[in-house]
Length: 272
Image 1 (tube, rainbow, N blue to C red):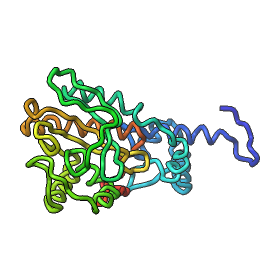
Image 2: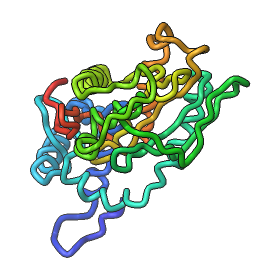
Image 3: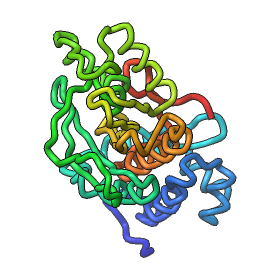
Image 4: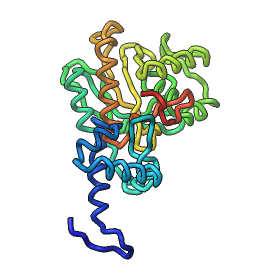
């Protein structure tokens, strides 16, 4: 890199070194140590240490013990560039992959008040199927996707608070006590499986998708006829849905250095 001079006396060569340091952070290696940064950049240890310390001071990096992460200030500067992201376009290939892996219809949902709407679908290749279509609207208290909205989106509970918990089948939660227990389970395990809550012969398994700010961007999941998928299949399909939702979150710029609290809001994780 040319030693072009800026308005001050420090050569812009330093920007190349900062770039090399930032290139050490990736989804696969989000929190390298200083030793790893030195080794990967090839910079002299003293130079690398000085630059890293300055980057922490300016908010480019955050330090937690002997590990470093991309700083919140840098994330704030990057946020305007994420506006207008086509979430459906980004998530669609992940839906298709989940459909192929699980063998069932995969859907992406967003919330509108006390209802959830299908915004993307990858249909199962099975002849026997329950139709899910883009634009389909369903209540959030019945079915697995709604439990995820209620677990990770504070606005969902507020929107549902004044609504009646309509009973669609014998499995639909008809009391707040039952619904709250289901929501707690969804929050604890990171996904939720429901059988026959909205239609007696339909089940679903869903997990949360987070955006770059740590907020819930939507809910991803699979829907299926209960004659083909039973509670015994949850041990197999639950982790697959969770993995797909995690991939979607990463594709939207979510950083899994954050954990999600009981209210659904995010905070920096102190644990490693």
